[in-house]
Length: 195
Image (tube, rainbow, N blue to C red; front, side, top):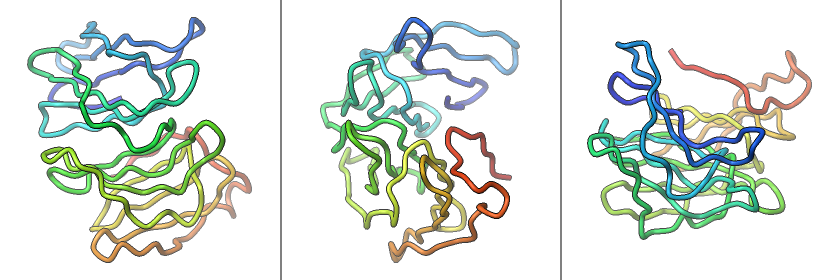
């Protein structure tokens, strides 16, 4: 899911019939759904990030037989998906991606074809370059991340009750309070919001 302008976008996904390439958007003003251009490659469990209210990017994901490394860009004005020439450095699904500046996103964790990863990297929308960051202390997938006050906070995920933050200036990971006293198990595919 992604939000741009007066629309909420549903991109790809999985149904009883398998992995989807279909995309829709919900008009907040008109209270209705409409189909938009389909993805070039079926995919699910991938992050979607809005850039300058004009483009939506999706990174990696799962296509039904394995994890993928392609990146697609949706042009909101022209209703078209394009595959970028640059590849995601990992073939993963269930990673998170969060904007940390006007032109940069941080991408964390994910599941490759064997296990969760600790990987952390930034992607610059203008240069189309990735920059590797210090890895997270623990491998994570199906987790949640949020950017606030110059730090990225990471919560939950499969097999993980720990929580960390990384200041994006000094690139150091630090523990933060865990939710384990409330739920003595991991949180995965949960809903979250920041206010």
